[in-house]
Structure formats: C-alpha cells, structure tokens
Image (cartoon, rainbow, N blue to C red; front, side, top):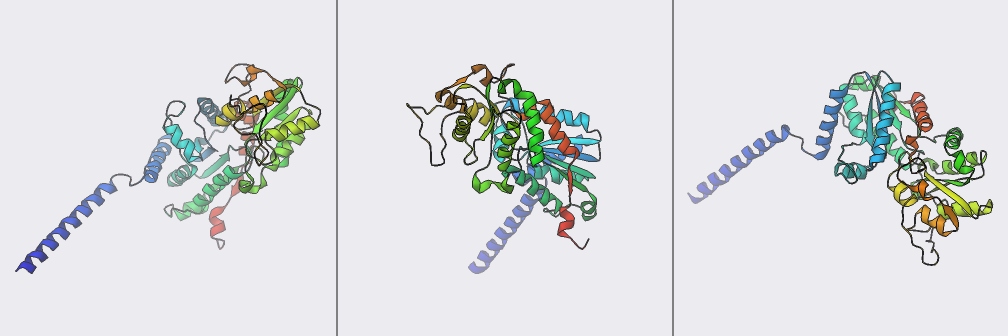
Length: 367
C-alpha cells in the first residue's frame, strides 16, 4: 500500500512538473527568450516601421559614446538619405562595447544601436531586393573584417530562416573603407590637403589614425597609413601620419621622422584620422595625460604610454596652439573625418561604386 502511495505521489509530481513546463513554454513563446532575440525583434520592428523602398543602405561604423560622434553619424545618414533616393538608410555599430555604453548613456543621452547582423537579418525578413553595406572604417583592417563576416553570415543564411528563393535573388553589395586601395590614399591626401594646408604652411600637421596591432593587422591594412603619408608628402613635407596601435608608427616614431626631415621645433598641429572624434581623439590626442618626469620612458614597443600627443610634443620642444585642441570652435582640429564634407563625399563615392558580393552562390556553386 505504501509503495502504491509513493507511486501515485511521484506520478502526481511529474504531472505537475509537466504542466508547469508547458505553461512556462507557452509564456516564453509570447516574449523573446534572450537578449539576442529581443534585439532582433527591436530591429525588425524598426525596419518594418521605416521601410519605404525596396533597397537599403546600412552604414556600419565601429561606434562611439560621444555626442560629437553621434552628430557626425546623424549628418552622414541624413546626407545619404538625400543623395540616394530609392534607398532606406540605417546606421549600425560593430562594437558591442560601444553599443552597451551608448545604451547606458556613458557620455550623453542613451541611444540604441545594434550590430550589423541584426539589421541584415531584418532586411532579409522584409525582403529588400538590394542591400548595400557601407563600411565607415578608415582602413580595411580588423573592424572591416567584422563587417565582411556579418555579410557572409547573412549571405549564407546562417540562421536558416530566410527564404531560399529570396536569398538566391537579393543583390548584396559592399562599399569599401576610406583607404581601401593605394589610389584611395591619394584621393584622401588631396582632400586632407584642402582642409589642412593652412596649418601645414605654419608648421607640422600630424594625423593620428588608429591602426591595428601586428597580430590583428587584417589584410595588412596598416600599410595604408604609410602610403597616405607618402601621398601627403607630395603635397607638403610638413604632413605626418601616425597611429595609436600600429607598431613602429606611434607618436615617438612620428617625431623621429619629423627630426629626420629637419623639423625639430616649431608649431605642431594634430587631427584625428578617424571617422569620428571619440575617446582616442579627445584623450589620446588632445587630452592632458602626462607621464613626464624630467623625461619619458619608452615601453618595449618604443611608445610613450599615458601621455597624449599634445603633451608629448609639447615636452619635446614643439609649440602647441591650445585653441586647436579644444573640443569645439572655429580653430579646433578635434574633428572626425565625417565632419568634413569633402571626406563624406569620398565615402559616398565608395557607396556608388559598391561591389556585388555573392556569398549565397559561393555556398551553392551548382546554382
């Protein structure tokens, strides 16, 4: 009798558990089960609400948490909407850190950004007939590879939920970064010279790019900075291009090249060679960090850490005009590339020349 009671109690508990499991499952069907599903739902709702055309352009930037950067992105997107009629234009961040910090309102009001994979999946669900993904990177380096990989995943229907017939017919294009080819470096050099030649006439005009560490130098893209400096030297010997992350091209090596060219004193001007002015521009370039203690100690890579470009060159005996390091103002050079009309024009030209990529058929060569 006791065994029978135990059996009935076990059976009853199992039935209760099963019912609870089913009820829980029903609830889960009504709401996203993870952050990824929630993000996808939010992006898809946005796309369905804003879809007006059959073609879309997705601008993909690394990201930022600065209002100045948001203003530059918003201006760029607005221009794209005007100059690419027939296309719906969206903006994406590839950096999860920037996305999370933007949502947390790190430096300004909270804003929601999403990774490219969510936008592309949503584009596939509403079935845009043509999708252009425009990389807003400066070089085709590590961050550009993320853009390409997101496109590959979409083109290969990695979620397995998009219509095969649609995937076989959709036109997918890729717009290249600012300095994708050697010719691009010459085009950019001319644009930079138009914007900065008055400074180069008064002293050394330095550009601070990001660059990739050697282990992340995807596509060997760091060479574009060297090629850009060469192209700029054809216009003025007072131009120099350095980075915050490229080996042998830190601010220390920039000063060495300046000295070799006979520029051991005089005025120094700096501008970020990045699409927007964010942490690197405001802190690494124009900040007040200073490790000077009667001299500088270089690390194993030959760089001086914890010291901004402004403070470094000032200690090295050059003259710094404080007005050019302000966050705003007519003389301030703390501006990203997207804040210059002629450089936005280069990105837009790359969008017009976007190349068709066919990841779907590369998976199914028999088709």
